[in-house]
Length: 431
Ligand SMILES: [Zn+2]
Image 1 (spheres, helix red, strand yellow):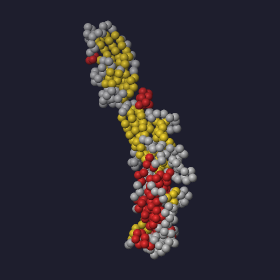
Image 2 (cartoon, helix red, strand yellow; image 1 turned 135 degrees about the horizontal axis):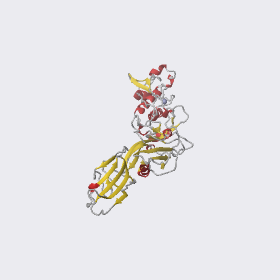
Image 3 (cartoon, helix red, strand yellow; image 1 turned 90 degrees about the horizontal axis):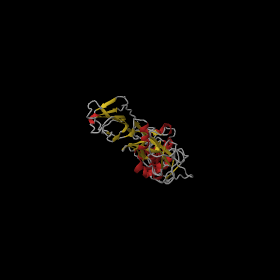
């Protein structure tokens, strides 16, 4: 009565589903008509975890039927299962010693767990946010369009699989599905490797590639990555950035190239009364010249600001702030330059008797500076080498800029590096 059970494969099932065993061996002898008594069936189920111990399981524990169907309990553990069902039928005439029919049914199946390995972490939690780039193989949770003309952003979508064997891998290749939110105006494709051929959005590792930067500043930012396996969704938020100092935004005018940060910051800020100056050391505006505001690179890369207080009714410089960077820097600089452009005048203007860019009445009504003394506000800069830069109009513009920096809404700063990116140096506000 030789029984050789060749394991059969039914692949991957979920707890609560039914697996169908396959007849691999039948021996029979004599008359085996009559009813099978399920109490004579014996089942071997190899436990998941690979300890090699075969459990001799009480009939019906797992709802095994004579036909070899196994209803896997809803609480069945994840793992690799091998099941052998021996159906020994004893003909009543010869019972209890006569074995007449011996049928072996067998199957292997896997109950899998699929977890999202990448993207990983939370881009809004300090200590968890992590820049995704070529050096670390597109992993992390903050992803940046590169500085190429086309502008490419690549996300590695990676799942962990247990048990991990040839059967489950083949299953996962077709049954683990990924989606990533659109990035407005950018073309999304899926690839088998970062630079590989185009494929579908399925598998344990697949790369989602975006090509072309979006036109709008608020099309960057938070996006959802979703992995679906066995009708269960796993989601994780990532953030999408542009390379700040590159210039590859859509519609770039080759005769007037702006850095990405200026292009998108300006769009976010909404104004039209200023222009990018790629050469100047610092931003500048002729006093009283609305429409001639020029914004330099240090309106992004960072500048310190004068700290002022009004002491006994007099505006006074009391300190210098640490360097302020990125969108707050931009908003503060803009407010500073707009102060020069809209409220101040050339030193030769008759309304400015002490030649400090501030009309005398404006000094009395608004700025808390002396209308008859052009350096009344420079305070601790009195002894500084470049103290002559700080006529009252300049000190007051610093005060206006500092207030704007402190209240700048940095939530839509998607420059890398920038206010919302990892690896960003501490951003200090003016005290
Ligand atoms: Zn100024």
